[in-house]
Length: 454
Image 1: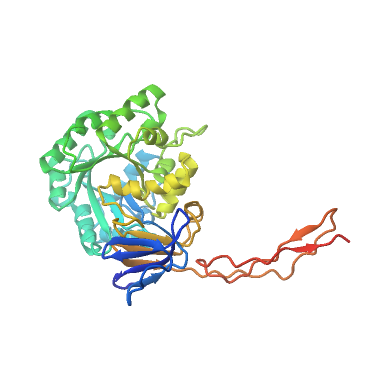
Image 2: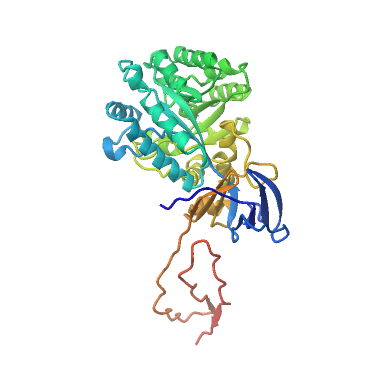
């Protein structure tokens, strides 16, 4: 993979917008300054990038990653299984990790996500307490690594960090992680012996530190529900910080009346919900070999109630998910398939809505928005989500930070089959030309030749 410094861009030429318009987009530093019909804006002497009709979108944001765990599966070789087995495999490996090894994997994954178009990542990082038996120094190894990577990549992308405190992580360890500059308080209260008490503990830490909160919430198909208590507890808290809940799988299993009650609490508290289709589809339902549940939150009910719903890729090639590309278009495609969303709704959840839940400024090809942009070789949002074309151009804060170009060559058929006689005229289209770059438009197809019936 080649690398070069970020290149400031002043004008994007010939960009296709999601509404079908072909436009030029002028940038002023990190902000979109003008959007006008293609060919109508002044062309500066430098900083011009011709998109050649590529689809220009708001760059994705990843609201729930685990960079400290990413790409560890080959080292751990975990057994395939549910959440419990994944936690056990990770806990056994975590005691062996060094700061440098965590940082190397995290950096590699973050840059891969940037190349795919993601310009902002919120990553949870484990408080490595080993059930409360580790020293303070050992408990902060993951956070040290991710704080280092955040600093290294600060000129390229936004990275937020969340202290993921297990139920047995002492407050002292959580505080030590936060002292390193971690941005939010997190945890998994549904795994605690007293889930409600653990919610209160984590919220108390966040209150003392004047920080936002992003909890792993009710990540199971049955068992305790903490989301309503969490929502009620933060309803009157300061709104200069974010409150969000990831997974919320339990919502997808509730009866309509109970679901409506909890969704109303979430909406009233303006708690953002982050659905994580790939990991939850993998982890949930192992105990149900027949009519296996989907393992997703109640996306439609939340959206209809006005809740801010974002979506993320979560784990990538670790004990919690052996596959995954960390690609927002993969996440969006799964939302369409398993969540019954439209492609436009799905892409919004990995871009505009994700930025909202993360507390980031609005971005996209809109005047006044942050120039965090993704250009892909696609003709529409549906085309982009369906095909996830590898040909991508990525801008972060108005600067070109990644470009992937694909050239495809396909062998031509040796001959065109002779049409069989039929009872009516048959139109046979000439074969398309080949050896076409992936980003190019399909070549014009000649008028079909009419083959007369003998």
